[in-house]
Image 1: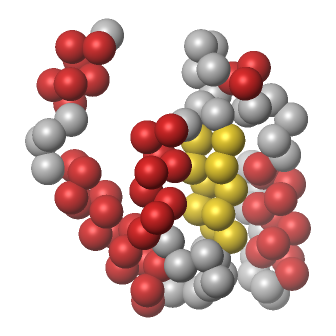
Image 2: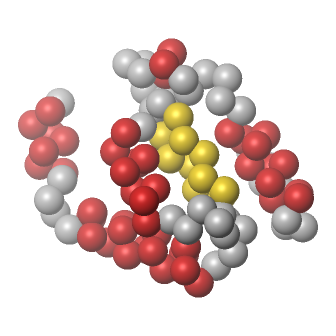
Length: 92
């Protein structure tokens, strides 16, 4: 599993996702970024938190879900924020 993760990394996806997040954070307003797991949370430094909602918790995998994913209410928090910003809620 670790070897697979290492092989997936360093293929250019990091730069691509960083740039997509940077563009969205800069050019859009009132987005919700849901960052599950430590790797995703590192991407949070790119996001302008004064313009967007950033929700973070443990990853929902069986190995870490009990450490903060369960009960994080990210779906309801997302819809609450979208409602507050006058945007359409998500039908999860």
